[in-house]
Length: 321
Image (cartoon, one colour):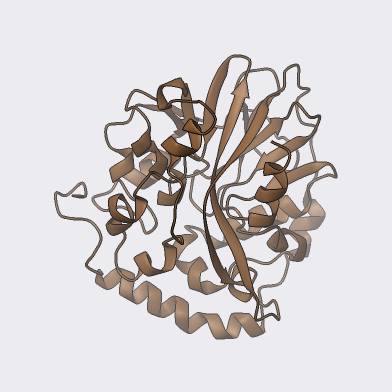
């Protein structure tokens, strides 16, 4: 698909992409031996504010769509392991008394042909999920839901694997996201690494600011319905406008959909960022992303954190569907 400058996106590696890949590879061996250490001062200064009381609850349904894997030692740098960590790509269906919506409409049908070619080489090789992929339309149809039954979508961020499912939804379905994320992904002449603009074209954007008070360990928030059931929180770092979605679920739990702030709960437990390869490619601001991991590590008990690619966490929640 043509990018905003009219050229065809993907396929041909740019010099910038090649140089970033080389820099990431060169930096990785040292960081596997000597991983970045936790910021003890930051941890000591973190406090936790109460989440707003929930006067409504939501139903949460996991839509598992694809799997892949990555070496555990690059997902959480410095982990002494030769194990391949199984990962997932998933969308999350949220049903509120006033709306039915999706968090991270992840993958469309035929994503290997319709979206991944927008990625420059060799990024395509790094990000492609295993086949087969369950397209979003089929995942919804299995629950007797049509694309037109979705009121809106909320991506945790605009990387391709969190929005490609838009191609399986009517163009009339709006997207709610922070203005800073919209401007970062769509404002320049070329898409940032990890962003495919094809699924974002001809969409209606409902832009917002996180202008609410601190919630838990996060500095900014937005209470989407004003009833405490869906609270958006600031997880910036992986991308400038990355958000988490804190849900009051109808089974009595509080669930935080954490997008790609981490790829695995292991990073939260050990306070580890991703290794330079792939972190230097996909994390927009490594320092801010690492600070967000500290905020996740310092969460009070009782918050179930589900990272978008954490197969174990996603599967455990899906078992409760």
